[in-house]
Structures are given as structure tokens and as C-alpha cells.
Picture (tube, rainbow, N blue to C red):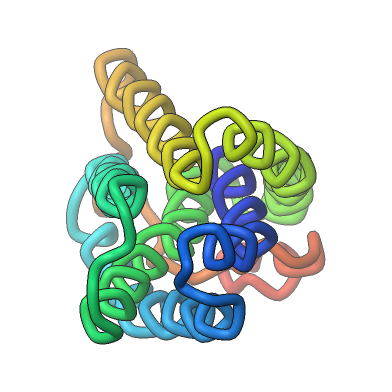
Length: 200
């Protein structure tokens, strides 16, 4: 849900943020590409790290990164193209990657026969977030100005991180030898569960 809320809101409203901050709509579109590039560069290293440790710590790290980079952007866009594109690459690296790690964590707790049902359930919850995120973030922009977009992201990810940390006090991690390896699952279709090698 958290992944859907922020990753639905930012692509939809980043041009609005760019226009209101003076960054420019065309630059905002390039910033979306920078986010995708960041995700491309870090999703597999983060996934491999999650294979070697409690995945929940990696999820918390990603959430903390989103909250921190969002707080920086809420304070105002950095001066200069390189710092601006750099922070959006970092933001995309953690914001667009943690859904796959959440999917891997969930897969640790279900048998292979349940992967399709798991993927479809996660997709539904993600879609609910993605559908409501732009509306909620738009209300935040109306209240707080352009900073509201990234204040919204910081609040959402901070809340999800607190939830994950609480869950870590309630349940021990799955032993490493009982966990399948990370497979990046995009939030696209429940058919992903059918082609996921862990479902065999």
C-alpha cells in the first residue's frame, strides 16, 4: 500500500511540483527518468542484500531513504541540475525498489503453490494505493504548497517504517536457508506469480 501511495503520487504530480517550484515541467519529466535509472542501478544490489540479511531491515532502510530524500525536496529543490538529478536518482533507487523486496519477504512466508494468489493480492493492494495516492498528495499540495507532495511521501514512508519496525518485534525473521532468492516483481499483473521461478 505504501509503495502504491508514493509511486502513484510522484509520477502523477511531479510536473505540478516542477511548475510550482520553477523547476519546469520538461525538467520534471527528465527527473522521472532519473528515478527510473536510480531504480535500475540499485534494485538488484538491494535484493541481494536482502537475501543475506533480514529483508525487513532492507525495507526499513529504503523507507528511511525515501523519507529523508523527500524531506530534502520538501525544503526546496537543490540548486543546479546535477544535485537535482542526483537526489531524484537516489529517491527512485529506494522508492521504486522496495516493492520487490516486500514481495520477496512475503514470498518467504508462503509455499510455492501460493505465489500466484500472493502476487495478485499484493497487486490489488498496490493498485488501491496507486489510485488514491495522487488524490491524497494533491490535497497535501493544496494545503502545504508544492512541498506537500514530498511531505506526503515522507509521512507515508515514515508511517510504514514504524509499522515494519513494530512487526519485527512481533515475529522472528525467516531463517536464511528457508528463504528463496530475491526476484524483482514489478507491480504489473498477477501473472507475475505464475512465471516467478519460486512458484515451481
